[in-house]
Amino acid sequence: MKRIVVEGLKYKYPLADSLALNDVTFDIKQGEFIGIIGKNLAGKSTLCQALVGLVPHFYKGAYGGKVFVGGLEVKNHSIADISLKVGMVFQNPFTQVTGSKMTVYEEIAFGLENIGVPRSEIIERIDSVLNLLKIEQVKDHNPFDLSGGQMQRMAIASIIAMKPDILVLDEPTSQLDPAGSEEVFQAIQSLSKQGITVILAEHKMEKIAQYCDRVLLLNNGKVVDFDTPGKVFSREDLEEKGVTAPVYTRVCKALGVKKAGTDEYPVTLEEAERVLRGDGA
Amino acid sequence: MIKIANLSFSYNKETPVLTGIKLEFDRRSTAIIGQNGAGKTTFVKLLKGLLKADEGEILIHDHNVNRKTAAQLARTIGLVFQNPNDQIFKRTVLDEVMFGPLNIKMDKQTAKEKAIEALKMVELDGKLEMNPHDLSLSEKKLLCIASVVAMETDIIIFDEPTIAQDHGGKEKIRQIIQALKDKNKLVMTIIHDMDFVAENFERTIVFTEGKVLLDGDTRYVFSQKELLETACVEAPGITKLAERLGFKDTVITVEEFINLKQTCSPPR
Ligand SMILES: Nc1ncnc2c1ncn2[C@@H]1O[C@H](COP(=O)(O)OP(=O)(O)OP(=O)(O)O)[C@@H](O)[C@H]1O
Ligand SMILES: Nc1ncnc2c1ncn2[C@@H]1O[C@H](COP(=O)(O)OP(=O)(O)OP(=O)(O)O)[C@@H](O)[C@H]1O
Ligand SMILES: [Mg+2]
Ligand SMILES: [Mg+2]
Image 1 (cartoon, protein in one colour):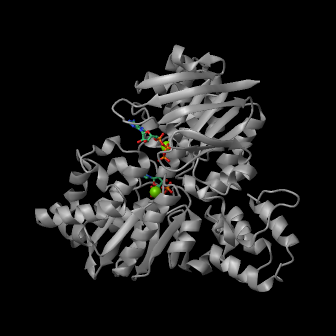
Image 2 (tube, chains in turn purple, green; image 1 turned 90 degrees about the vertical axis):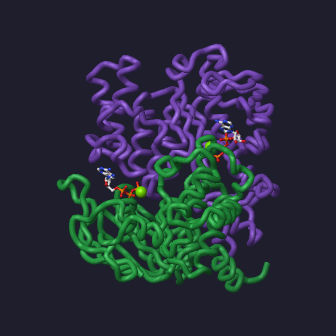
């Protein structure tokens, strides 16, 4: 079942002279874990925001084409309606804090109260996300009196607590320590296995390669490719698009070893280990 | 250059955030890594005199930080904040970068030259009149880096400079760090990107729960697998791959890996 359909999406911010998204077309099935990659200013955040309706409803600007998310056409529905189906974690967690809540706990409760989740369930859900993101110990802190990583964990927790059908995450682990980043990717993968559709913009190519079913490569607002990590990261023109393949792919490429019987280079630690062992070192 | 003895700090007098930190810094470029909430940002804010220690002392060039004026400190030590929104407050990109130099009494002409030079390094010199708040997160981060670089302080601290950067952005930051090293400045960087640590810093310090867990040559630090795990950090990807393949030495760069691999495999 298709959960997201984007057809010929074109978008220009007000006052901008060029298109931020230029004829973007793709679709995503339920439960897929999709990575969006591309150099800075490629259009990743704009695309994420087009999936939750901030583009065009909040930013305005010139908009063409169609975007369907969970059956709703974004252009014809309010951000509030769309937010019942799609949750988004923003690139800068700071901009996501409401600013009106005194504690991390209340901050996470805010969205749940808004959609009328019963009190007892609110408590259950908050306890579970505080635990998942390892921020129990700061639950009574003011949301601004947190370390950068703790604030980002809180931002992810608030959205996961809402249990949306579709999750959009814009570089959600940029400030997390390596162990935390790994845990978050595992948690998101397990949500996707439960049927939640995930779209995640990211510069950490090793994580994209390891966790995503398919990768959407953007460049100057256009879709360059939408395929498996193995295919996308084996492209010869990747660097021209401002993207560097995972380190495992780069070494195997330099050594000229591909995955047996394919035209693809390894993209994960495990794959690289396998081919390089076979290589007789 | 910096000498820290028995440093302790807490925000609310109940939960200690840093306890008994003892460290010395010479001019080696240094990475500070460690789990979220370990106290890394708090530590550098203390160095910069933005917070006051509960106990212990910090000497910079043999002078106690607490006895230096804000202006003296501003001339000695520059800090790029983790969150650019905490740092940016001017209306244009150029004013933002000129603010620091003017504040330490550089004349206007020199301040402008230094600002433009720094903005060139981060490739924002084409956006001088833009409002910083209209920049993307990656650009804001680079703007904040330029603002501090323009001040030409002897000590420069970056708090997670590579957040939101693509490969090109990281490369710019790498070059800036190299240029600062060449000018014999002390560069200290808090960072969660282990590949970047391995490629750019001579020394690495690991913080955990307000204490220093490990401190030494970057290669040595990345050889301490178990200790790294307790601090929620890890060795770079290439180090992990080399270890799995049974390489005896700790490999920390792609070049080393390829060289080793080519010399010990039969030609194909
Ligand atoms: N609020 C805005 N107003 C005007 N232009 C914008 C705005 N946000 C983004 N843009 C422009 O839209 C284009 C795409 O930017 P976007 O932020 O979507 O890129 P990105 O791929 O998310 O980049 P990054 O990796 O830096 O996060 C860029 O040219 C950018 O300058
Ligand atoms: N203004 C504040 N008031 C109270 N507690 C704070 C404040 N700022 C930070 N803390 C707490 O102090 C501890 C250390 O925070 P700090 O920001 O120094 O961590 P960090 O090592 O930089 O983490 P990160 O990698 O997430 O940026 C954390 O537990 C945090 O919750
Ligand atoms: Mg973005
Ligand atoms: Mg920090």
